[in-house]
Length: 367
Image 1 (cartoon, one colour):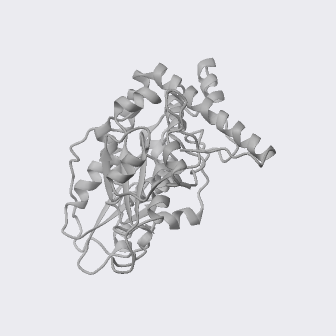
Image 2 (spheres, rainbow, N blue to C red):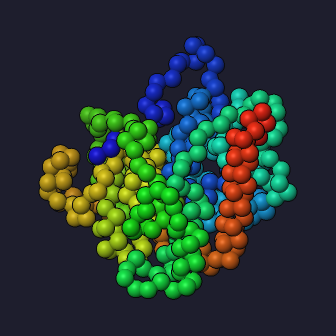
């Protein structure tokens, strides 16, 4: 079990207003198909200050500069707001970050990752704030990206992980998206993520249930953690005045058994971080049993009365399958976007290699 927290990021207590002026931090981005990489960026940014404001771009801006987003802007606004390190969300944030934007929201500086972000005409989106010295950088989370997740979902539609022979079309996708230098998940086929205890500690606070809190247990795959999950957990969180929500995550093998195909798209460790980042979850059980047993309830010492079961309607019918269908519907556009993103990343890597061979030159990097 991993305990999560609410309120202050990482559970650290910030100095009072009399000690010093609060540092306000700005982040912005597309935040399409929000994953634990986005959450980790926001966690790092929040740790640099006292109040984190996150600007989210519109569908129109993203389509202009990068390609069609998977989720609508309203879905993306709510997904970002559900991340526990975020204090405020600014809808329709400009794609190019300017000093005017930072000043408008009284932000001291902006934070972005150490990868590249360019406008449609190749302009550095953070050029102005970098030159003004109001730019900070955080480490990018290795092993995951929106492009990678899109690739995984396209693989799901090609063939199952079984002994059947790959089609030439499937093999082409495998060559494009499935090669990885790191650990290869037998269920997703393309995950490059390596879990560490340090990463879990960074995402979890370790707070135990307090007297008077109502312990609520939910369980599922929570694969490709999305707005449907957020709406459900928000409803669950609202069932009690002082809730303590425990989310049980099923093993990859169990999810594959009842969902089939190449599911889960994210492996158990990836799903753990995604759920831990949600502000409505207090604790995560890694590898929870599919059936809720008496032993499991005894472990939590809840509920006090047996036979308590509540079915919650999230009001949102979005599922992982529907997300895959969205991508299939616009497959060519998504493929073009992935190729464009890959070309930018290769150019960035080449620039970094040149920097290593010519240390006297400076090369700016942006998210």
